[in-house]
Amino acid sequence: MKNRFCYAFEELNEDLARPPKAALRAMFSAGILVSPRGWKSLSNETRQALATEGTREQVNVVMVAELLKEAPPGHIRLVARTADPPMDQVPPAVLKALGPTRTISASEWASLRALDRYVIASLAANTRLLWRALDEFASEPGSKLTKGGGQSWSGALAHCEVHCHPNAIERLTSSKYLDGRAFVLARVAGVRAARRTSEMLDLQVETVSGPAELDWGPTKQPGVLLWQGHVSTWDGEFFPAASLLAVSAAAVALYDMVKEIDPTASIGSAGIVEEPWRVGSAAGFEREESTAVYSAKNNPRLFAGMEPPSPSSSPSPDAAISVPDVRIASVPDSGPRGATTSNDGRGTSSVRGSGDGTDISDEIVPRKRHRRSGGMSTRAFLIALVVSMVAVAVVSTVVSVVVIRVLMKG
Image: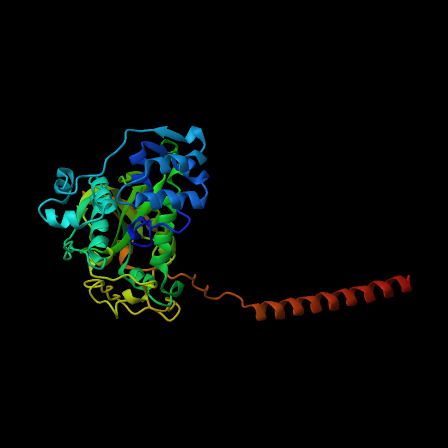
């Protein structure tokens, strides 16, 4: 356990911004449930005391009721008392949720604490969070649970793809671009969006998001990055709206970084789907704080088959600008540059150039504009300005002298 009253998979700090599973067990055992707003009105000492009661083998319901008197009456509702699952039998809902790939024997089930058994039973409808909980329980010292053994989880999750040129991917993963933190920043944006789902969606105003899992990985298609997300509610149910907001915001954040490098970049295939979790460590990459470890040099698997096309002709010295860690092909300044969107049947959009017959998705536009040939430099402009001022002064002096002499003769 992360500490004495909450688990690591719950992603909670010491202030307990939302009720941990231990506190929920205590409240359901007493038949008194406080809303998320009511929970925030409790002092931190009361929150921790409720969570501590939930860790005991037998919950003291009288103590729980006494602690909940601190919450506003409008945020408390009476619910049916929920008994702990039996110690000698694994609940059928849990066995169904785990399926044939991962099982819990009767002896393993009996070896768990009362709180652990409650957590597993309460997550039967959220298999992603259930697997994370089981992995944490199995990693505890002295645990009799069998570890997952690297088995791939599959279920409902949010899916979104970012399409861009392989050169752009190479730049995003470079240690010289945003200090190698491009994907870290994108993930932060996605998690932030998930946390604010109740503020953005009116129908979810009373729903508080809980654990948020969000990560990215390569796909078999060159130039396509995949974001997958799974966000749960405060009470442990799958939260589709927050999950979709998370992957979409992360994809948009990444697009915002890459749009100047590759104007043809696009976002597609966003939705809730049933598929295996295949990003992050499941894709073969252990995430670090910096994304620099995912460069082509250190991780050739990620960029396999993503070599940029060779230019058909050698560009002039002024036609391309060198950018660190990415090779950039020049794009002609003349000719129309339209764009049409096509669909490949999976909802994935691809952008193709038109007008000159080329595919601009195979080229990267330089981030800086080319300097115009024949343009006047600043120094030349200043010299011309001084010369013109001197010329005006000389002409004015000559005209004045002539006029004065004419007037004197008259």
